[in-house]
Amino acid sequence: MTTVASQPEALDKERLRTFLAKSPQTAPRRDADRPTFLNDAKAAFERAADADGLNTQQRMAALRELMQVYEASTVSTISFPSKAPQLWVNRDPALKESPAIFTRRVYGPWIGMGLTRPQLRALDDALYHALSVWEHRHPEDAVTELPTLAQVIDSKIARLADEFSPDELRKLGATLQTRLRRKKN
Figure 1 (cartoon, rainbow, N blue to C red):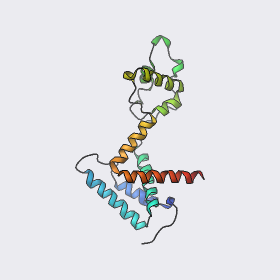
Figure 2 (cartoon, rainbow, N blue to C red):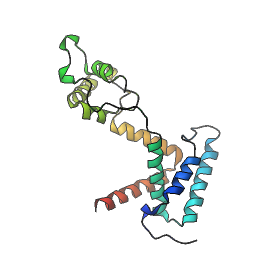
Figure 3 (cartoon, rainbow, N blue to C red):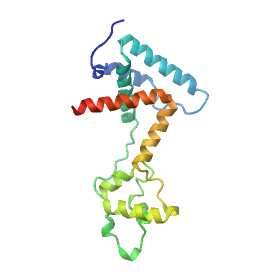
């Protein structure tokens, strides 16, 4: 077995694509097949990494790239608006809509389908702030199907925690930080 001393970017992208083509689009969740699926996936990854002679850092980079490709392949095909359908400041005052009702009416087709609060803020900053104040004062009227950035990240971490141990996640996070720092230099 030869040791590869190159940068993590030297990952064989064709092997990664082949592995993804053989893998199911979504991993089984908390059922009888789950342990077998995870064990098989981990074993396949380890065999491929051993065959390529990847060190720990390169394995983490490969896992990161694998997750990026997986995330890209599972992204929703719904197209979000690039411009606000109606701005909060241009609403009809006669309707006397709360920010929550306005948001549900104007952004209804995208709420619960992947639209996030950061995207809402980019589309209509005034609505984003009005909705935040409204929900603080009226928590029973919160638009819960419109996740915050923290909630989006938490859900991704929860999905990863279903597939990786806490130690593997810690290593993955450290590797991501290292790659980001290198990219900035």
